[in-house]
Length: 94
Figure (cartoon, rainbow, N blue to C red):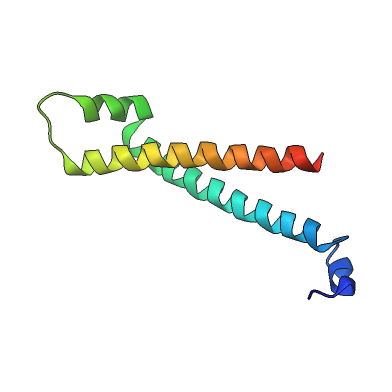
């Protein structure tokens, strides 16, 4: 079990608040990772809509484009998920 004195030295009142902060840090790391992936795709393709138009173009088969489209879409979904989770944690703390 975690010593209460250690928690207080680290600036926490209890184990729950320490755990909450750890979860927030993990979520912020996930948000940062998703944002970086999206930033790289934006640098290469412009907007997601631009990439989506290329992806949906008739008569083209480009495996790299397919992979990038799916990865960018997944990164956007993950970013939204983690942002929602962070907002829920912040609302619970208020």
